[in-house]
Image (cartoon, rainbow, N blue to C red):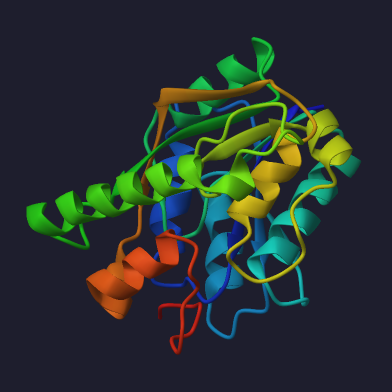
Length: 243
């Protein structure tokens, strides 16, 4: 029985999911089960994931209830029901670097309940200036989160530090204890993190857990719109799906 599962929620990611699966297949730690949760895609996302089994075994689960939170929660609970004790997540437009999963496992087996890592911009979507702007926006959002009064109340056992849902790992025990991922569309990360913070102090960050993040929201929303999104001000008149 494999204790570690990687869950990848996906919706209409036929153009990118092959790269994500390839990045997972070359992890330095390959003792894991890989689960793609297809969230009602109308393109070839699920077919591409199934075809990838020739290179690396992939489970494919269909989740018809719309929303990334629904896909993640169903995937995590599916894995737990099949014996998973450690769970990691990335997204179908992201590229985890080769040591990502090894760092996640090391943290969880070393006493962490939740492991979070570092996100950086994908190199194939923007140039140097775009990637630098992405770093600035992430830093602004992280600083805003730490200062926000709602994140600093006495109900929390651990201080706030922004994490990206596409770069996290958690024990199955903690996932169930905190109530799991909110079953709704994006954004879900802050709500989930605060659920964990109400449950445990055992939250750790690793700079060795690195995921290259899609910057297509920057292209779709522009600087102001992207900043508004990362500062928890929603998407305004724009769709929450930047495609």
